Length: 221
Image 1: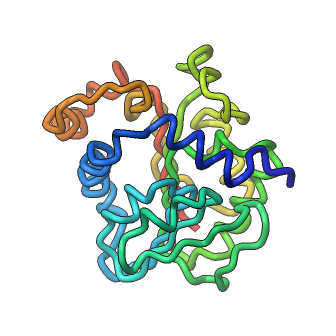
Image 2 (image 1 turned 135 degrees about the vertical axis):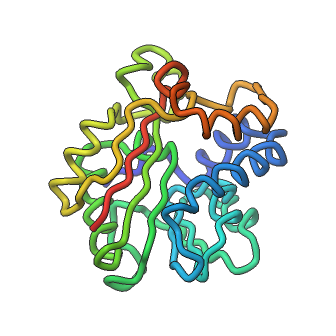
């Protein structure tokens, strides 16, 4: 695999994009982590794939927590008890077979450089998940973002819930949840809606097809 961005480049891009929003993003992910807890047991071993500044994994209530990212800042932002794996996700993961209960990933797969990298990453996910374990994937849906999708320099791989679902099936997963329109697109443009709006939005599912531009997939090994 050719890594599209070096660790130093990832560090600069992420800080430029989200600098000054760390506290707000942490509060947002507290709310989102509560929503995704329906798939995460308290005794679970969880990996946050493409963990960034660890906003999700820091707020997960589980027994064992891992984050994987090449961004050097991930280690600095990880909470006590979160172990960071600073490695290329398309290469063999530094985890044993059948060792994870849940893999979570948000707005990450589009940053991989090729479809082969995505397939290799999913193959590693399938290897490391226990039988019955699940992967939760959230990401921008190119079907609803034909232009704005490319506003980000580090977007490489356009995906929909169907294309990602297809390669997940090919790599040994069974799709349980496949929602084409879930959350709105991005928090990187400085907008900070009140948290009560997010909590309400997550409960009002009829609003998702109107405002959502990110897919949500839950697939099980």
